[in-house]
Amino acid sequence: MIALTLDRIAEITQTAIGGSARPDAVVDGPVVIDSRQVAPGALFVALSGERVDGHDFAESAVAAGAVAVLASRPVDAPHLLVDGGDDEVVAALARLARHVAIELSDPARGTAAAEVVGVTGSSGKTTTKDLIAQVVSGTGPTVAPAGSFNNEIGHPLTVLRADTGTKNLVLEVAARGIGHIAHLCRVAPPRIGVVLNVGSAHMGEFGGREAIAKAKGELVECLPPGSDRRGEGGVAVLNADDPLVRAMHTRTDARVVLYGTAEDAQVRATDVVISDNGAPSFTLDLRGRTARVELGLVGAHQVSNALAAAAVADDLGMDIQDIAAALGAATPVSRWRMEVTEHRGATLVNDAYNANPESMRAALTTLGALARDRRSIAVLAHMAELGDDGHAEHESVGELAARTGVAHLVVVGTAAEGIAVGAERAARQGRWDGETIRVPDAEAAADAVRDRMRTGDVVIVKGSRVAALERVIDLITKGDVQ
Image (tube, rainbow, N blue to C red; front, side, top):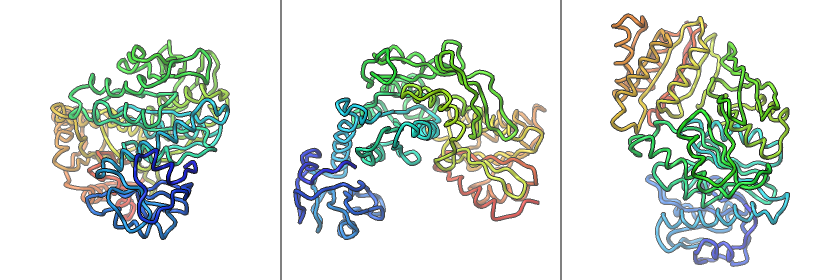
């Protein structure tokens, strides 16, 4: 974080200095909510969780080097006290992050001003955020959240990792309702906003794709007016291949850059080829300038993510050859997203972080590309928060698994029953000759795979976060391939 005295932080956060806190003490270390992450100069934010209360760790945090504790009740340590409970602590955290983001991105800082990039979409946010951060790090020090740190707590904590040396701040913004993205954009106003897609994730909470599009589009509404010159004014980077995203151009005064395979996209992919290991390559076309990109990431859907990253890098002034090289060098950063490992002759794909209909289709398409003439096994759990369409969407996934030609379909949990129903319907109609196995949990899923897996097989694991299927791969690798 940028260095600030406690009295200045108190002013920004609208808190009162308490305990033995010295107003002139300087916070120049990290801002953290986990006392184990405290370092000298830190500010420790005490939140009351279901299992632990951060206030109980106030003294140990200060002993470890924290300058003060941001708290909702007095503690026996230097502290900044909010007038209220946890919600006010989070609001104070947001105010501090907003101050830092605005100061660092102030155009008056000239070439030292930080670029703020926001990324949203129903699926692919984390992977694309990771791609953008890796690519644009070639222009200078870059800060991005770890994993999916994209809510009202993780977002400001990420912003507060930036300091005066930060050149790029790449942020993932998520929504579980109308107004959430607008709030996060107020915390860290982006100059560049990337909208990837409008899918079915959280359909049950939003009530329909149009409502999801309304929420995702808040990102482009928050952008400043555009400019004809690269690197200046607001830029809305929109997926030309998604009609609901493309339509967002009417909701912003920013300059619009379309990316995709559509002929009118300014950032376009042509000549897409999927290798035997599932990694795509393509020709990147930036308004007539071209370069070949060989991705190291797995899945045809990574082409769209790479185009979004290329559009951002292009606006930041990177040369197309440098962009292509950086995309080719990019590696998976966040866990359990298309992690490919080899174990005793079998290929294991851990894509278990989360699931929605679009990402399930991408995962099964990737499985088919990886397997080709090999046997494949799919371990699938349910997709949460789909509302009234949930059972039908699960049946569609089962149908797709059958069309993909999986030899064994392991369906985890009763909430995923529709997947089994869809696959078994295909089997009854003579369109699939594979096996469906129903199991209650990750441990039973691992047992089922171990009993069936052979050298040369390809196994993919995917489900909603609550299913915790990431454990399946770990459990499988404890056994031997027969």
